[in-house]
Image (tube, rainbow, N blue to C red; front, side):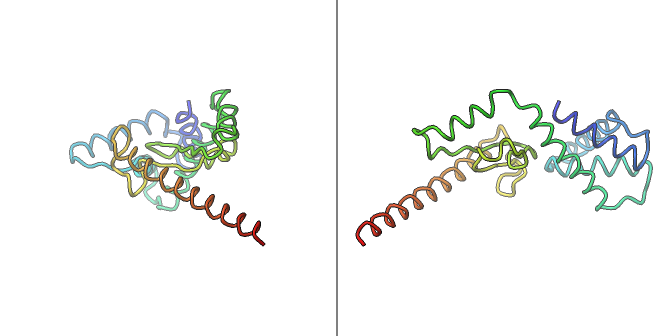
Length: 185
């Protein structure tokens, strides 16, 4: 339901600005057509670029004066709604579980990351943001085109985890040294 709700908002805006002939079906068909074209050329692009191309192609059927700025605004509308819809559709136990993990005494240094092929971003979701330490997207420069299930995205996540863990350990050591110095004074 998350992507459908984001698509619904996008379609409403496309119909308002350009044409009532733009529908969910026409957008999906345009997206499929672009994917097939890319496949024949053995080309891979990020999902963001695929969506932007589909938006632009749909609009160009009705208005050839489309600008990159308009396409980006429409894409940003889609992405904002995608994150809002994801937050609305969280499982009811998600937040209590994350809170329990983050605040339990035995796991005070727990590191929680999100791994996504696209643009789902817990940092754009107020209820999730406090519990996440990092996000790895299949669209990140150091990951693309190695999206799930490729090991590349998981290796990038492990690298980020280790980097955060090392930073935490250095901060703890610095804090311990500060406490010892203060006790000696």
